[in-house]
Structure formats: C-alpha cells, structure tokens
Length: 172
Length: 172
DNA sequence: CATTTTGTTCATTTTATATTGAACTAAATG
DNA sequence: CATTTAGTTCAATATAAAATGAACAAAATG
Image (cartoon, rainbow over all chains, first blue to last red; front, side, top):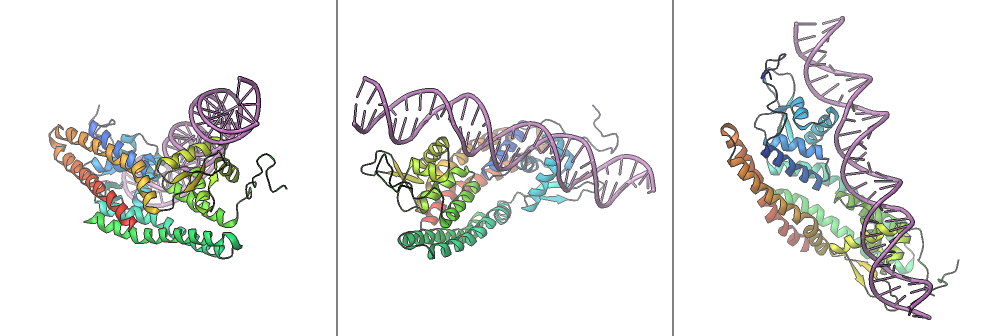
C-alpha cells in the first residue's frame, strides 16, 4: 500500500495493471509486431512506451508488462538497434530510462535498414549466382531458365529503387 | 529405370532431386516467404512452379519437394487465394495442373489484398475505439493520450493512402 | 572493498506454428 | 456400381521461435 518505495523514496510503479487505453494501444502494437515478423514482446514494450507520458526504466517495463528479465532486456536491445526507442537521462536515478521514438519516418527508416535492406542485399547475391547457373544449363531448358532469372533480377531492381522511395513518401 | 510410368504411359517426374538452379530459386522464395510471414512450404511450392517451364500436377509438386499431402494441399490452396498460382487445363490428364503467376504487380496486389489490407481495416477500428477511450480519460493524462492517438490515426491514414500507391508504383 | 543495484547472457522450457499422414469425400473409370 | 484416382480435412506430432530465470558481469554505493 505504500505509495513511495522504502528504498528510493520515489513513487512506485503507477499500477501493475494496464488501463483500457494502454491495453488497446499495446494490443495494436503486438499485432503490428506480428505482422512485421517481430516477437510480441517487442510490440508490448514499444506500445507501453508509446502511450506512456513519462520515460520508463527497465524495471517499470518488466513489471507492468509481466515480462521476464531476459525478454525485457532483449526487447529493449532490439528496439534500440532500429531506433524505435531511445534512452534518456533522468537526474538522480542511475537506471537507464527509455522513451519511444514516435516519428514514423524514423521508425520506418530504422526498420528498413535493419530488417529489409539485408534481405535485398543477400537476394541480389543470390540472383547473380542464378545468372551463372542459368548460363551454363544444358540446351533445352536454358532459354526459359534465363528468362526467369531475368524476371527475378527485375523484381530485385524494383525493390532497390522502391525502398528509398517509401521512406521519402512516408516522411512527407 | 523405366522412363515411362507403367500405369499411365506418361513420362515419370523428371527427377526426384532438384538441380542447382531449382534449388537456388526455391531457397530464394523460401526466404521471401519467411520475410512475409508465410510458411516455408508456400515458398517451396511457388519457387518450384516459378522456375519450372511446364505446369505441374499436385503429385509432381509433392514428390519433387518431399512434402506431405497435407502441406501440398494447403500450400496450393493458400497460393491460389492470393492469385500467386493458377490452375491450367492439361488435355488427357484429369489432374489439376498449376503454374506460377510471375507478374509482380498481380502478386503484390493479391498479397496486399489478402494479408495487409485486413490488418489496416482492423487497425482503423482499433484507433476509433482508442479515440473514445482517450476522450473519457481522467484529467491529467488526457492531453497526452489524445495526442498519441492522433498520431496513430495519422499513421493509419498514411498507410491507407500508401498501399494503392505501392501497387501503382510496382506496376510501372 | 563488501554489498547492492542494474542489467546481460544463455541453457532450458514454453508456446505457437507448420507439417504429417490416416481417414475421408468426390469424381472418374471401366 | 465396384474400384481406382485425386485431393481435402484435421487430430496428432514435430519444429522453430520466443520467454523464462538462474548464473553472471559491471558499475555504483556506502
């Protein structure tokens, strides 16, 4: 029942439970995470930070979402790698605090760089290999094989032109 | 070693194994499937149909990819629902035959309609609910809550304008 | 410098998802 | 109309991915 922590003198975490809006927002981001092939804990953490006004410490996040230390640690790390959250300094508290990056352009750019671009790159390497394979195929099937590889290469090129464009479009 | 099936008189499946190009192409699509959150069998089936010149029957696909009946059946069904493959009629064979749709625009459109659009739609409903929740929040946090919901709504709108544009862009 | 706080790592467990395959339906064949 | 062929369905199983939590490291505190 104490409203202040005995050790720190700071207010304890607002509530272990989530209010209805927090719940709805977090669910939204859990679905989005799933759509993007990310673990649900990523969506939970980002969602909580997105809707919370104050920055939150590791422990707050873990407690309010009922996550394990491991999941919290890895989730925060992952979110940092694509700049979806940032750490902020809170005077008088030695723990790191986190807040959400809410600018769509930055989020999209970070995610693309981290998760989409690498696939495009390895894809390009694959297509190059395919071209060589197709070129040294025995007679009858070669024409068709080569035409399909060209098709893939075109897709690849469209993707390459496309991604930067997406970012620009989202920004404006 | 017979080159013709004893029962049907038709040539047997070209090879149970895959040549190096087939292998590479299929791996490409398996990765893509994974990126898009689809089961690997979907990628395998599409990849095989993409690189194969002739249309293939259910049984060919199952045999060459070492898939179970169930996975083959469900994979083909799923690929049909977003128009990534189509059935073609082969005279003198009562089995359905399949071939890949290789036009990127059609693939993208089908996939978006089937897998992305629904998320946007339920997302919109969620945001509407959030607006109501935010509006009836107790004093101090309401301003912030509402501003965040507005942000989400803007994202949503961008997404809605964005998808059709993507399709157009991919087409040309 | 012993102790507490803060967070990370990673082997194990859990959970979610995809795959399998036997039982089934429906249609064609003879 | 009995039998074979073609394909679907779905309960059981296998697989892959994420979450857990105990052991650990690093830094701050007193």
